[in-house]
Image 1 (cartoon, rainbow, N blue to C red):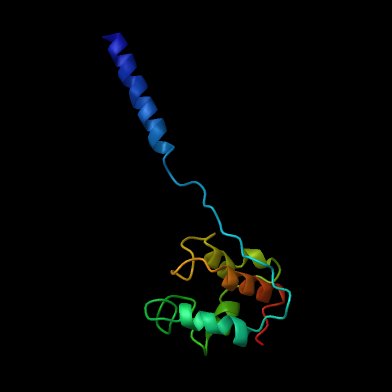
Image 2 (image 1 turned 60 degrees about the horizontal axis):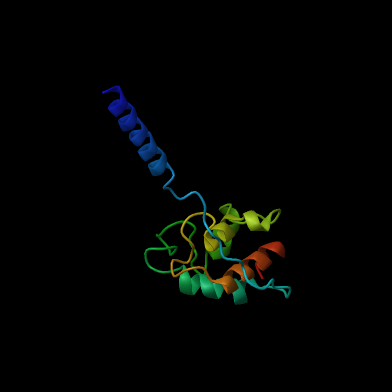
Length: 130
């Protein structure tokens, strides 16, 4: 009987170990593609893809989820909302969300290396409203 209890306890312990080992503890991130060295314009490079991919019904439009990324409010929402970190651009919340390093990659259509590279370059350049 003691032998049967030991085996049952051992099997239960192994089961617990196996179950606790079956969780997501890391994510594989996509790189950002080629680094952009030219001047990145918020109005010409960043705003068009934010408007087309993020400023849509149910997402980051007026009345949707923060930050509001409508054409009129995107810059202010990003810079005043704490989504941009010019001191450590790769730690910017906008960049982390877009690369999937902070939850589901944004836009929901999936990681876009070109967009990520543009955003990172723009933030590195001081996140200017140009």
